[in-house]
Length: 154
Image: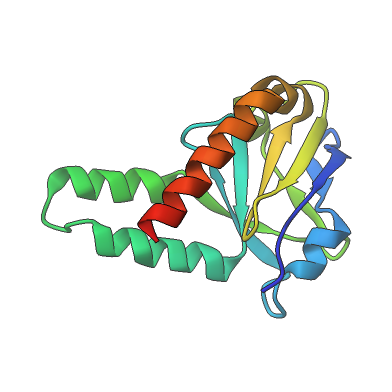
């Protein structure tokens, strides 16, 4: 599996259209290059873009963990999926992000960042991303902590 890595700057035009970096478009599987799923991240001011197969696998995993007879679980599934929408990728490799979504992530000057997240990627306001990043020391400590947990739990 190819992975989405790196960070790419882009600009949204007045209509909210922006080019998905060609590096990322090339990583989309054959047959999944015409549309993706977008969802506002629950914990960060960014939009997460999922290839269709990643989205479907995540929904299947979530569905397995939820009880369809539990009203709270039903609300979790409903809220998770209601915040998602299909984005068509035009022949030039652009997607249209509504002003509502751009405002929700703090894009005010049209400058955005595409940030790779292994099997998906995020769209951030350039300034918000820089403000949200962990310090180098905090990042190193948290990364070490998470990697040690995986080794001991694995």
